[in-house]
Image (tube, rainbow, N blue to C red; front, side, top):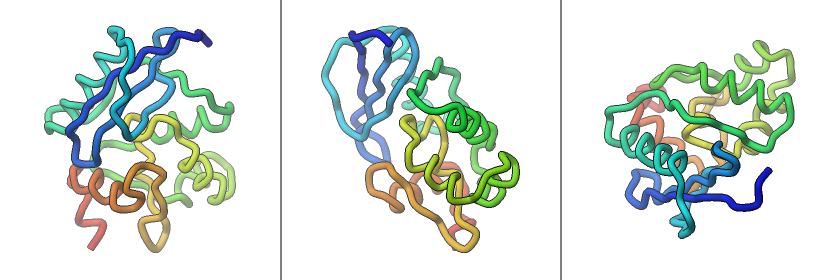
Length: 155
């Protein structure tokens, strides 16, 4: 990995400000904060796509991703990205699909370095919301699910 990350921030979202970090032309991290730093075309594209997502005109992201994660977390991230906008899966569903215990799914969700873009908010517990590592915890997850029209699942 390079040593000169670029960043771009979007201050106004329903879940607070978000920033993306790009290293070597791919997104490595999303933070809940405004971070000042040099930007590049990938960081700018990510912020534009996040603005479209929160503005209701985008449901899928088309960005280069390079999270610093294990091979299992990479497979897990691909499974998350396959969950359509406005739909959810349970920890158990993903555990069955990936052949791992549900606890491994919960841990992978908590370790997701690029939430929203890799949509861990779409994963629920069998009998409840489960957790969320982003800003606001479970309330942030609820906001994202409401934004995607999945609020009926919360009632």
